[in-house]
Length: 165
Image 1 (spheres, rainbow, N blue to C red):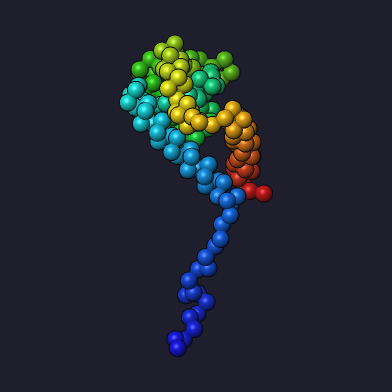
Image 2 (tube, rainbow, N blue to C red):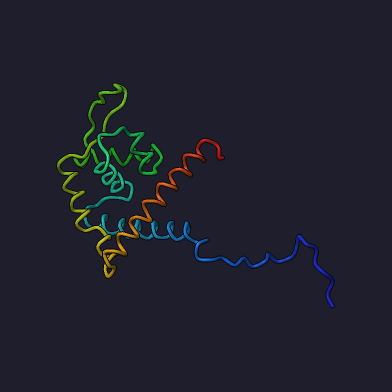
């Protein structure tokens, strides 16, 4: 008979997880897989890095914007966003203009060429393949649930940025 182990050396108890406990992990996994797949596709099709196509997509949805706003909404640090914008400006996909609100800040917008790339991204977007075989009601339900989860995640982020509870 072996001596009992001290509590500190005991193997951790197996935690039984239910499906609902894994929702955040599944969303993160889905986002990672979609981003990686899209990155491969858009590098091949347009020569865009992940940061660059994220900037194009975010500027299509929300512009004109400052670099700070763009970096925040795309989830990028300001340095990576700045480098990506510089490459897109050099490639004539993004234009820098003067901000009417703040003279020290530039406003970023897509050029007509950038808009054409965005339109091609949307036409070739993995969404079509990802949703293939799903009914309209399944797509609507998934879209609604993801929108609600996104709002809640944004609220959690805002709370965390303020120091928690």
